[in-house]
Length: 190
Ligand SMILES: Nc1ncnc2c1ncn2[C@@H]1O[C@H](COP(=O)(O)OP(=O)(O)OP(=O)(O)O)[C@@H](O)[C@H]1O
Ligand SMILES: [Mg+2]
Image (cartoon, rainbow, N blue to C red; front, side):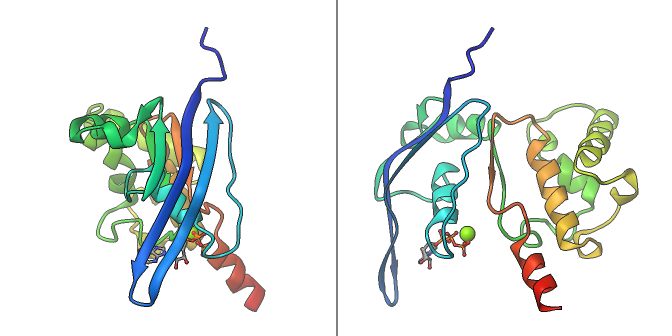
């Protein structure tokens, strides 16, 4: 049996500086953390403190100025394109903005099955069954299969994004504020 203490995600002394029109912004300064298998790490901080930047570095969507990111024991910066693509199977993301992360021209069915299509998994029928199961696991029934993002609430968009992130059984899920702050702000204003 596998030990439950394998480190699946580790950063060491990450620094990220953005060079903007109004000068440099140090988004991350010497950030280190490690997450063992089966554990959850929450990054908490005020707006602009670098949470999304940390997520983007871990996903390989942005490059750090210094420091390292290791995913499943592999240093991201040492991987070639093919190796990075293979690693994409293991690490999925739910982004901060519920609307912009979903293709508005696609149905919920198509959105959730995207990772299965990308990795060539299952027949059309198997994929549909899997999508129905995934939607159920996030509290949506099959009536939503043919809806498009604009026909969903913000929370439902977020659930669809979570279902998609889980579609290929990733080892790591990066949730950038999976609970909707915008929705909460809106409710507070009512
Ligand atoms: N592409 C960019 N170019 C320039 N500055 C950026 C860029 N992306 C982020 N920043 C800056 O880096 C800092 C960290 O931003 P980041 O998005 O990581 O914050 P956050 O903690 O996710 O904030 P929030 O809670 O509002 O989502 C901010 O000061 C932001 O303005
Ligand atoms: Mg953010």
